Image 1 (cartoon, rainbow, N blue to C red):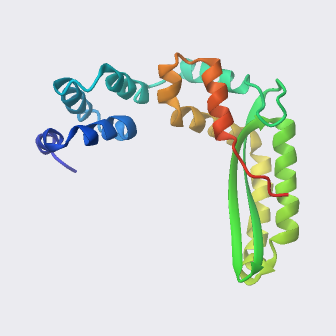
Image 2: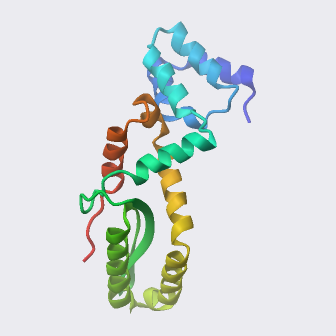
Length: 199
């Protein structure tokens, strides 16, 4: 691990482009003691308050109450699949296609209504059951994939909460900058749920 004095020297040597890149892309993962060094460089170089606002937004620590409030906003959004106002849930499932010596696995993580999520998960299970066996690797791994699907459906509620919390954490910067706006959460859900149909 780098010493703070060494990090400070490195940041002083970085050009403006590199400093902006760290602020935009790496702020969340920085050690607490490194953040003031980065902010100081931004101020010293007059790179703009918007970068400092972004760093603070990305590093926002949610209280339990704030997290629950944001989760309710996510769950209360419109389902991007059917455009209905049903409560949203998180779904995670895997679709497998095996052909001769090749195996193609696609992992899906979606936040959509329960009706749409179960329908998509069922289509994935049918596709995998029919087309997942047709290679040596597929034949060997198929029982484990099917067991995984059964386990996932049994832990549906826990998995849903984890997916929604993960979505909030990944987008906390944008959500914070936009004042926890429902419209922005809806837009982020639209981006999150971009999937290709496998049937």
